[in-house]
Image (cartoon, rainbow over all chains, first blue to last red; front, side, top):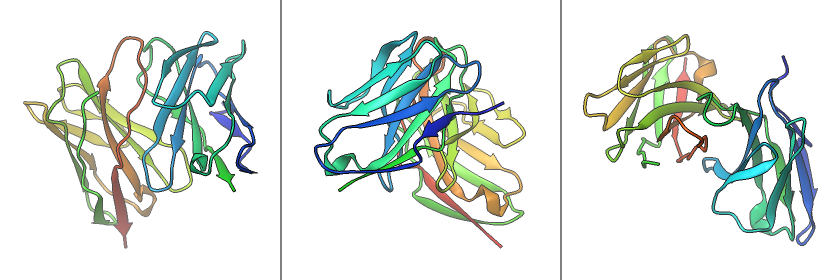
Length: 114
Length: 112
């Protein structure tokens, strides 16, 4: 049973560019959440997708957007990249509407903005 | 979600019990205590959660004080592989919300 997978593993972009990160949830899970983790900090919640809709959003600007597909996989898009967007981006999956307490995290995508 | 306070770092000898404290003095009656850990270069991993009773699973035990204002995660026989950052999180455990609010956690170093 595959867990949460993310791609790519690492990514280097230039300021002002756009980036798309991808996540496949654990088998059977229908909810995907995205987190940003800066160096030395705990993960910060970006947003959550369930039934292809954004259900919750953290304190992140509109440059951060996402999408969930019918197969429950998800994308995180970041436009107009800033140096401060350099971080580890984590995807977590779960069963929606609080049906499970546990979130399963993927290994993350390391984004470096130069 | 209630705010939590954890020590920045702790050391533990291999084979000994690791006791990681967490203060959550503003916890509400419907908020659960969760523990996750993050081993270097990996995503966070769920350990255990509880409401007011003590809980135990194959990984750890969770002791919650009677007033629920603090808790302790216990790793009974720490190994080198338990070296990680441990996060104590308080959140509403039922309903639609599944957002986790992480602090900076406790960095546990297990040594020989």
